[in-house]
Image (cartoon, rainbow, N blue to C red; front, top):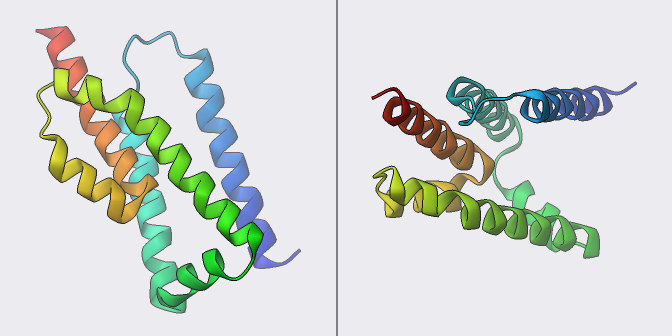
Amino acid sequence: MSPFVILFLAGLAAALAAMIYIVVSQEKVGSAALAAALSGGFGAFTAITILYEGVLPVWLNHTQNLWGVQVWWDLLISLTIALFFVLPRARAAGMSILPWLLFVVCTASIGLLAMVARLFWLEKRAEAA
């Protein structure tokens, strides 16, 4: 098995574990710690990837064939759907939307997970008060 297949399978395992946790959790508000850990872990992996491969492959991956464009569109649609659900709650929690939106646009899932971690933290704090 190649290192890329191992990373592919590790990502699948991590995502499935997080999804199972989300499904079985009875919490009213999600886990800020889990969202922050996923953001940090994926951010670290992304930093290593940029260090070793640069940023140009991102452009090449998404502009060379239909599958690349399909994955790009999937990412954009997923982020839009997530923001559709997250932004009203973020506003209600008093978060400043524009900086978070810029962070999400620039970093995709890394920023979205960080934003959700902050949102969950604020919601739990308000729930405890």
